[in-house]
Length: 156
Length: 264
Ligand SMILES: Cc1cc2nc3c(=O)[nH]c(=O)nc-3n(C[C@H](O)[C@H](O)[C@H](O)COP(=O)(O)OP(=O)(O)OC[C@H]3O[C@@H](n4cnc5c(N)ncnc54)[C@H](O)[C@@H]3O)c2cc1C
Ligand code: FES
Ligand code: FES
Image 1 (cartoon, helix red, strand yellow):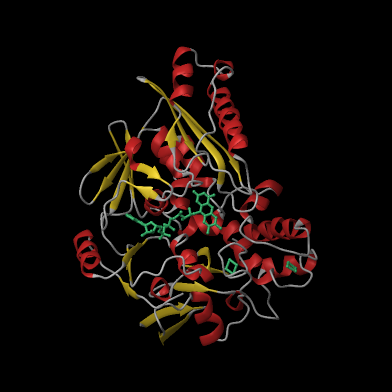
Image 2 (image 1 turned 60 degrees about the vertical axis):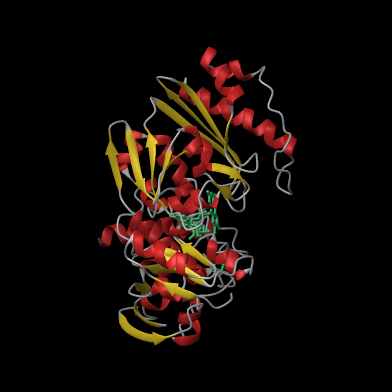
């Protein structure tokens, strides 16, 4: 099927089989490999991207559902020189070890900060329930999200 | 996932005529249940009829004593609606407890109710609040809608368009979530109406049901201790790696008592 979607600000027209998943469009067709596949069963959140501004699991979005939408991936939020405040906070707070979960933990965390009011330790943990990290024990991730939330609020 | 054709109708009539013309069609709402099922090849529809563009399936409106929610309304919208939180706080709370943030950003009310997963949350509200399921054909009483494991009163091709929830005097939902998925190992909605108390249970049996023994006890005396003597038979309850039938029966009473405590 023919689909048109905006990925990180660029309009893309693609011809893909109907049973293609958004995550495969991103990784295989557009070579945006920062979005990962952890479980492929909608559980782990390693494939999280923003679809029209909200965090979704891209392994559970079909090509036809992505048609006409605007997608933001980890590649679209900052540059190596100018990191997004969430990326900078993850680095400062040592919120990653192997890094596999990190891109999508960051995308989920940005959604959390942008779309949910008062965040504290508990609400960050609840808000990230859809993202698994097998390394860090989450403690520093929560610190990073709270620290970035302050910086993002100050900027806004 | 097998190949299929993806249809995007814009009206209910069009959706239904596509359904009627296809070999083995399935409606697609948020896809948070259907897509994982298709990946596992437990479902292999020839045609997906996507409801996202269909007019008239979204929106939350308020009528005399009712909250009406369109079938395509996503869980996050219900969870974050200040109006729902004001009219039926237990319903907004329930929606906020479903899965995780990403699941709530995609999953919809109609998909959850049509699916009748034994561990889904919304069915407890449909039964506990005595909701009405509005379909393309008719209105179905919540009490008779859920029939068995993944079985509902819907006919093939019948489309849920909205669900009408009567506004109770007060209601509380309590669930014991599976720590990994957040699905309800057991969940109980207790609601007080001028006509009496209703108790809807999910997670415990093959599908959501009313716990009439608990309702009777609470209609006599509305306090947690009134439930002490009530027996919850576990015959026919679900038993799996998460919990035995006996444990689920125990949870139903504990959760009902906690809900009543919160309402007193
Ligand atoms: C990781 C994870 C955790 C979850 N945790 C929970 C949880 O804690 N509690 C919970 O309740 N649920 C949970 N869910 C399920 C989630 O709520 C789903 O969104 C929901 O069960 C199905 O809704 P959907 O809109 O995604 O429907 P879909 O997957 O699109 O459809 C489900 C079924 O309903 C049919 N259907 C859809 N809409 C209609 C309609 N309007 N009329 C008739 N038939 C229709 C479809 O044909 C299909 O058979 C979880 C899911 C995941 C992936
Ligand atoms: S890969 Fe999508 S949720 Fe795990
Ligand atoms: S840093 Fe390794 S999985 Fe999170």
